[in-house]
Image (cartoon, rainbow, N blue to C red; front, side, top):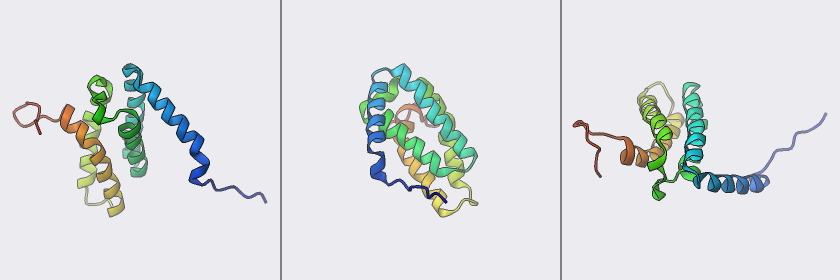
Length: 135
C-alpha cells in the first residue's frame, strides 16, 4: 500500500512566492484586479451558503491582504468587488447573529468581518440619512 506524503508549510514556499507575484501584477491593472477579486468574493459567498466558514475567511483574507489592500486606496476603482461586498457583508453579519452556529464558526466569521470592516466603512456603509458615514 502506498503512503501519501503530508505536505508541510515550507513545501509551499514557491507557490506562495508565485501568488505574491501574481497579486502584484493584478494590482497594476484595476480592471483585472476587480474581475479576479469578484471571483474570490463570489467563492466566499458560495462558501457561506455551504457553511464552510474557513473557506470564507481564507478567500476574504486573500482578497483583503494580498489583492486589494485598504491602506493603498485600491478599492476606489473596484466597483464590481464593492458591489459584491454590498451583498456579502450583510450575509456574513446575519450568520454571526445566528444562534445555531458554534463558537469556532462565529470566530471565523468575526475574523472575516474584521478584514472587510475598513472597506465597508470607507466605501459602502451609509448612515440612516443615506449619507456616507464618516469616521
